Amino acid sequence: MTNASCQIICHNSLPYPSVSTLLLRQRRLGLPLGSQAVMAEVDDTDIMMNFQGDFPKSGRKSCRYPYCIVWTPIPILSWVLPFIGHMGICTSSGVIRDFAGSYFVSEDNMGFGRPTKYWRLDVDKVCGNGAATWDQAVHDASEEYKCRPHNLCMDNCHSHVAMALNLMRYDNSSSWNMVNLCVLSFIHGKHVSWAAVLKTWLPFVMLCGVLATFILTLNLQ
Image 1: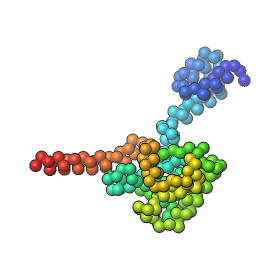
Image 2: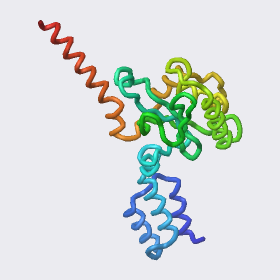
Image 3: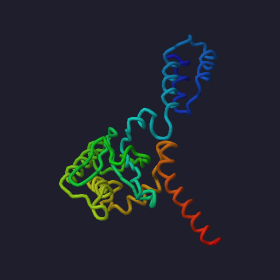
Image 4: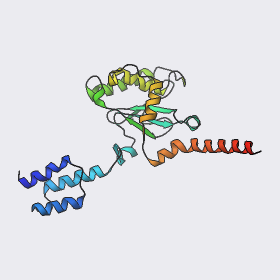
């Protein structure tokens, strides 16, 4: 490998440059146009430029969020209490599993619509063989909840996710439950798009506006 090629490849550890910068660098090093080392870096740069947040656009459009807990609002309930919604957990390949109703765990068809928020977890915090342990825990929790009735307050979609995390002993803990999941997903969750922000918060903001207007009207009378 030539010194010029080495200089280009070493730049992969730095922030990704623009295509124009790569071409200028190519001229300075005296490499022929379209050299493999430079073109490989251009391809990597283009891939990274397609990322928005933690996932590529194509992944978000197909609802693929590997190693994530995903969340979507429940009509009426989430409009009043925006921290409460429907939750699912994704496999290592991004397939969503969620306890959508009594004796039913959905696969890749999340109840109440596409996720609006995701919380990406660290597979290195799984006790066991990484992806294999993660997927096995998600599978076992899903099979268990196929045998359970849905209870909104006591045994719900959050409980299903909590069981999966407990089975894999995520973060060396077996104390995951619907309460800490609700709080932590609300704090750490990221919206998948601006449209998801509106879907999550607009009804709540509108209700608050209506309520504030009603209270002001009463006080002014």
